Length: 468
Image (cartoon, rainbow, N blue to C red; front, side, top):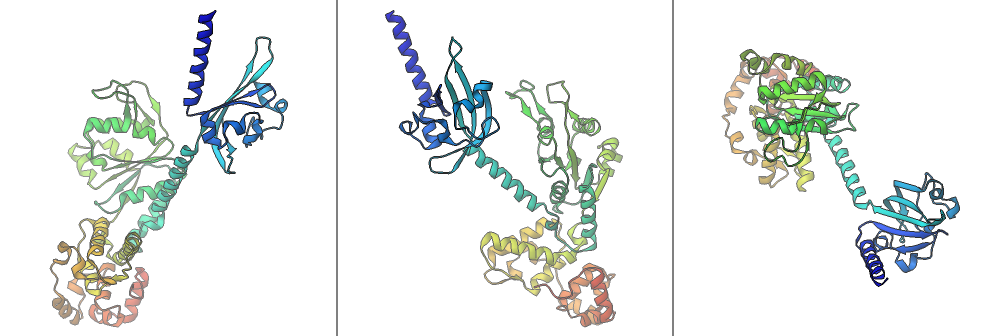
């Protein structure tokens, strides 16, 4: 008898310690619906101490949802008597200080051997931190959607307007997209614009750089693996294709993938299913694929380095993103946008660039495209001490470019077109900057009337007034 009493005492002490150490809130009710026990986590979650809660009804917590309705005033009206249990109901309770606390609530009816109700045990999981994380994810997705709006693709040139048109058409379809363009032209921005303006915008947008990983690592990254598939695979891992389920996966630098990955990717495109490394089970994925390359894939197809069938599967709807040197009339707009972004980031109040600096920026060939231009303006922000970026604020490799203003002037005065080039939007914009937007002077230089210059500016969407 003594040993049985000791065991009972020990069990009671362990039970008490267990309740005290639990992160979840636990409380019990008697058959009349009054609180009988209240662990420390309930004090933390609700703000009510045990002395304040014990003896009160659970209506003290004012749950907004319990068996699909608000907490009843009487235990006889509570659904727990009818159903005997409540599993993981997400709801809110009212904190002592008056604010709502997101929680998961579970409950169990306790019956005696005689079939009578002895009480109720309820557990409460605090979701406050999870709710904060959810809000952060929602805010991040909203910001990401903002970043990938159509109007984030800056430009008014004919070439960029064609890109706009293609992006809108692609967003309205489910076709596989192949983005082609040099490094720095904004392929990921275009891919994001397609996704965030499509019906999949609420689902994941997953980006993978295919050149960043070796073949074996890329295979695991894309398809996932099971435990024991290779040395170091200590647990199952979900691949990027599964992470993108329901949404879009963007495969950047697709021309870098190996023959093995090409075969596996072809299967994904054909069957919309994947196999994790080390597993034979097929898993269906609902994904939209956007691939991008800065290489000439047709050349790799001819040389046998890239599968022809995969190439045609990828380029169902190709979009060519022009290099910056082919749309120089967009440079002033891009500079203005970048200056605004850097002002917000740094707190500076730089207004524009000087005419001399703009002339150099317009003449430069931009092998790194938009990314290089953005970096050049960011570099200038570090050095600029006035309201306008000047020549010596620019990176040295840009300002050391060979430039002959006198030669330009003599060419212009002979009424020939600048440098003997055909009049294009780029040449016209360059000449406008040289002449400080004096259309008559531009006309004299290129051998056209002021009206003709005005018409060309309207046709090519070049601002009629010099940008600030």
